Structure formats: structure tokens, C-alpha cells
Length: 251
Image (cartoon, rainbow, N blue to C red; front, side):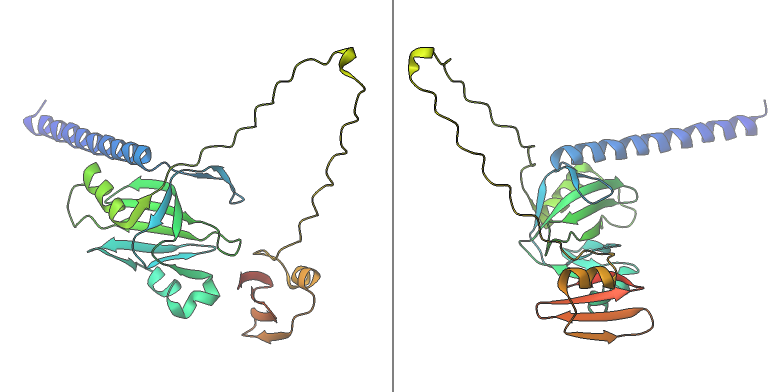
């Protein structure tokens, strides 16, 4: 084998080992962060299969949206929009894209942790007007800087206060009673069961058609068109935005 061929093989093996070590290190950081900040599991319908730690903002400025979410970055001690989200989630598009700016004291559930060139977090807000908002957060480590668990954990703790993971509810333990004897006296009929709870009132949800909304709320006070695909229905206590014939936002 020529010396050049042996050199190529050696370099290839070294490069593969370096990549494997880097990937293993990233997996280890993700695993340790997931233990420190338990991740929530959410199904396709947006319901919680498992609720992890609740992260409460220490800083204002996190942007989140109902449908696509907003991209945020934490850099130099501040939260700000990043990439295309600077336009999509800007104040001018709050209503159109269902965007909300979250402030200190409001909370999110962590739904994902990913280590690439830096640390990326996926977040889902606590319900606001029966709606959950999505956000992505990039932690700016520094160009060319290596990522460590300690650095990532410190930056997350600068942004959030960590609440305890939500424990699943357990059924109450039945109270044990002594067996009844025949000479204990006359039997008393048990009280009738409580009446069933009233049926839940239908609520307006994203994706509904104008006909479904009118079926729930009745005819709107005013209707306005904002182009060929966008309409506004105004009610005494609610304003609904339709895009392409479906509910895109309501307040």
C-alpha cells in the first residue's frame, strides 16, 4: 500500500472518530439537560401525554405563535427574534399570524432539547384564552465555541425559573369499612347520585369555518373584508380573524 493511501485511511479514521465523539458528547449534554429540565410530551392534538418542568420567564421579550411558532435567540443577556421570525412575528403581524409577546412571570413547558452548533429549545406556553403558543429558543454560545453542559445549564437558568415536574394524578384510596352485621339495625338507603354536570358550552377554535362560528356565537355585530382571503367578525366581547375560510386568530 502506498504511503499516500495509508495517510488517507488514517485521516478518514481520525475524522470519523472525531465526529462520533462530538455526537456522543452532544447526546450526553442533551441527556443531562433533560434530567435537569424534564421534557413534556405532547400529542398531535396538542394535549399533554406527560407534563415536565414548568419554566417561568425571568426576562420579557419571548415571542410565540399559535400555529407555526416564533424563532427566538438569547444573546448578550437579552431575548430577541431571529431569522425570518423578525418579520413573521413582528408587531405588525401579531394579529395576522396569531403572535403574542410573553413577559417576565409567564410560563412555558419544555417540549424539546437539541444540540447542534448550539443549544435549541422547543417550548409550549401555558394556555392563554384556551390557546397554547409555540416558540423556539436558540442559546447563542459564541461563534466557534464548544458547548458544555455547565454553560447551557447556566444560560437556561438565566432565562427561566424552574418549577417542579407535574406528577400524574392518582386515584384516591378507597376507605375501608367494617363488615355490616344483621343486628346493626335497619338498612338505610344510600343517597341518590349527584346530577350530571352541565354539558360544556362549545368554544371557538382554530380552523373553524364562519358557519361553525355563527352556530356557536350567532351573527356577528360587524363583518369586514381585508382582502380576498381574510375576513373579520366582531362580537361584543370577541374579534375573530378568518384566513382562507378558517379561523386563524381570535381575541
